[in-house]
Length: 519
Image (cartoon, rainbow, N blue to C red; front, top):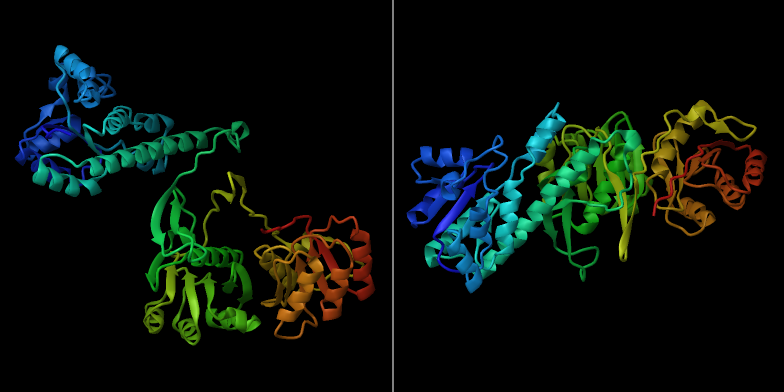
């Protein structure tokens, strides 16, 4: 790259641009600019040449055409080491542009405003900016291109030292540009797709474009021999772990993110004050109570061994009493809608515990889709947002109808079961889990494991199963443990046999017609 002698500056985000332009001007670099950027720089005393003067062609069509001109793009794209390019540039009076500083119309901010119209959105689709960025990035061997204010400092420093931008930096800036323009085009495409009427919308497009921004590198991935990073999806507003603010503690790990997400999404299921403890992406204790500390104590007592070193989520602000319970044992992370100041002081005693502030509430409109990676592709689906508003409306398959207490317990159990790895079996009381059997290849084995994990008698509990019982053996095992009512989807070829077994044991059984497999 030859010495930088001419820069073109045209920015919507003007953060830091004045100091950057002044620095360029002091180095004797000629500055070309357009519209509001030119006015701002000129008003601040920076010498600027309008692009229209440089091209000999005025801005037109309400500013839609400013820089789309051969003198601009020829000056950017011309290869300085190609004699034929140099000859043609001289023949047509095209002067080289060595530095392009451009950021784009604020499309995402525009469409985020309430009441944004299609016309407003369209007018905030930048054409000239991406074109200049792509031209400069393509010719990065001869041109430096800057699209982020974060890069002004290092570019100016290299220019001061060397009069040019290093090849390494130019290549990094080139890559940044193509990431930036890809994201910009993706945001436009996604918003335009959102404007299509529901009855015309393609739920699963032929080309799936997903955009995430890197939030942080992780110490490692799921295991120490794997590298990892955490990315956040653009444009989502739902309260979530992805948007939580970490208040203290060690950096979040790969597994912390997974467990915290599982815990919070389960806590969201409940209206009452609820505590959830997750270990290895499965709940090991869930409880509701009149106050948060009591809910946490009940959840912890469901399986105290598994709760040790667990990840916890609450659906209420953490108060001092709850904080004292948390500092009484070892926990990895706590997610909640805010922490009281005195609770934070108490939790400082455990400075390594990761505290995640979700914001003022866990309530919000569920957004987005669910995906899982497979080698060479992914599977893409709706999130499992299936809920049962009132279990009393479900079909009673047995001779006996659940009691009021059983209905309450069945509603509690079904919410937990949805968040347990399949095959999932959950024994609960009205306000807490008692035994959880997760992730077994056999539903019968899940029932047996749930019995083993129970820390208190199962007599009088209810049972939730995430999918149907293929045989009566699981139901017999549950009855032997003391369960008095069951909630399950139904749909097995052996449903009649399972229902008969329930009747034999005096168990009340209701059918959801909804399965909650979780893999």
